[in-house]
Length: 213
Image (cartoon, rainbow, N blue to C red; front, side, top):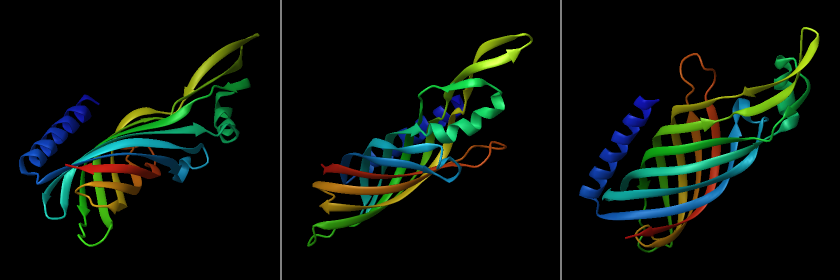
């Protein structure tokens, strides 16, 4: 994990250094919205929320490079989760309230229109970097050990740091070089590494405000 953090830090420093040295303009945006896992975790996790921020440097014409940091949180569906605790052989299992979480730290690139005669602009967004994924939930109950029933506690799920990619598109109401409202849907794919099963997937739909300076 230290290698992941070091690699990501170097990437962010390089991206920001290149962007700030060559930028014609800088754009900041803050957004928030809804988030939902899909695929194998679709039934296990509820709809949740996402909040994030993006900084982009306009390098040439419609090309922007920068980075994005965002946080996602989802509640567990206990009715679906009960099926997964049967392997623990617990009597009266108690599933403690928990949540799934994902932190995104991603260098990113955008191709963005800049129509001078239209109040609506569009962009394509791509990013790749580090995801800190926490899907742990604590489960407790009683297990027969010899002649006694002993209360035990176990943790299901993973708390990992993984490489992932993000792809999305957006609509801007206003100019990307000034103040604008931003609608930004995105798809995220987190690779679980060798022999760790299927990748974790989720999508977000965010609404935010951007400022170009």
